[in-house]
Image (cartoon, rainbow, N blue to C red; front, side, top):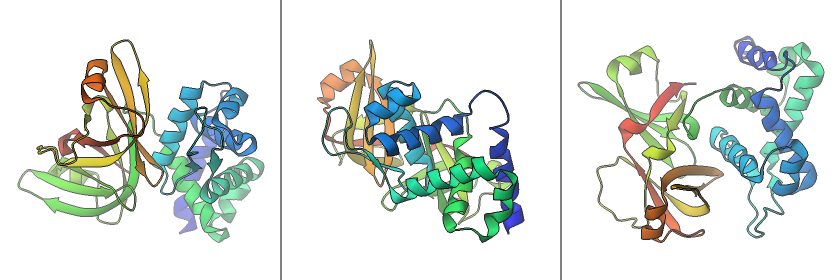
Length: 267
């Protein structure tokens, strides 16, 4: 079994071959900075990125991880007190060993702690490059085949699932099976927001949570919803809609999107 995991880790090692820093490396460096600084603001300054970019990377990391990597502070406008979870600590430790030992790390993978296996899955997921703002990874818990399309339900946390519709041919070609992991991609512009949890809609997916931040632009606003369990969903709506819905940080909100708006990728 260890031999099957070797290719994915070797693929991640390629990211360290060039002079330019890879996407994965920058993410790990941010985790390390958060661990050492205990603050998103100071960590962002240390790695040379903006406060917003730091939170975007954190949200992406938590969404693509089976377990939360960072715990948000309940107070403090500048993100003070943010810290890594035990799982996040394991990821840093594993990545540090990966840098130090390279090929020897792969050989030891089969006999190391379970956190090493989690690291392999984590690295494989974070090398994904896509324009979709929302990316979630999780196991397939249900597959329902129809005459033309197949409905696939993905668990992204203990309390949230995502349903996607793909053609039967796609489901067959991508070898989707119950229990296997997949990655769900949803563009932020495809997500409708509502404060009415009982709103009747044809959208197959309805995820609820609290608004963690609202970033206002010239025309549109980026609204992030904390789904719990370290998962965050981002929606881009017009400033007029934010005003009309009276959306504010801390409010409960529903994110609605069609199953046909979800793009699935085999893990």
